[in-house]
Figure 1: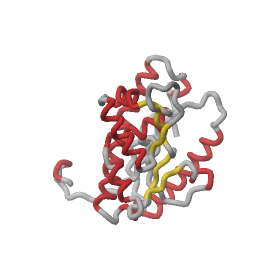
Figure 2 (figure 1 turned 45 degrees about the vertical axis):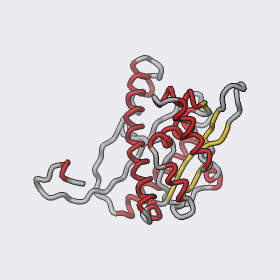
Figure 3 (figure 1 turned 90 degrees about the vertical axis):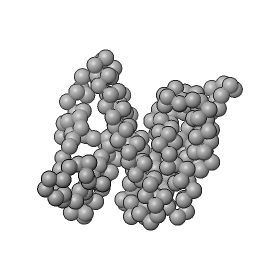
Figure 4 (figure 1 turned 60 degrees about the vertical axis):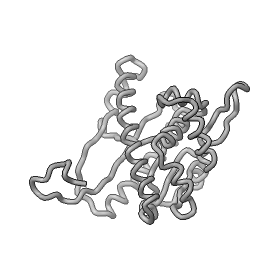
Length: 224
């Protein structure tokens, strides 16, 4: 469906079904009871962004991440140590002995939405993560436009690229089925294209957010 592919913050997603064995080794599944401290540590927009950068672009130093995030290296170094304490990141191989390099431990962070409703802390994490995902989409759109304009991407990407804004009427069961279809299809296509030299990193963020009917005449800012 050309022009209808949304996107997501690097590898933060809501878990809805058991994963295959090869996927589990790449995945950190968060439990709001067992991982309460880790969730509290990760409920910080900069830490989520730093983890996303490492997953998207590979190992980096605190200074390299600071330059990308627009933060001081002291700040990124501190937040990386917090992420390391809770096993989200770990030291990577050093290019030289001057500065520590960091890598993401897992490719994906996942959770059960229902389980995350159990406490204010876990709900706050989901809210922060979703807002960071939207920010990442905005940044990726700007990068995509620049990459196309400056010829860093082949013209073959013009037609399939895009963002979809649809409002279907679905039941909870149908929305769950839609997520399953997306997960399954994305895994199949990723495996198929793994060795294709034409493949590029694609920012894909999907959102399924049911909305309650609003009374006539109510402004957007009046709904909270």
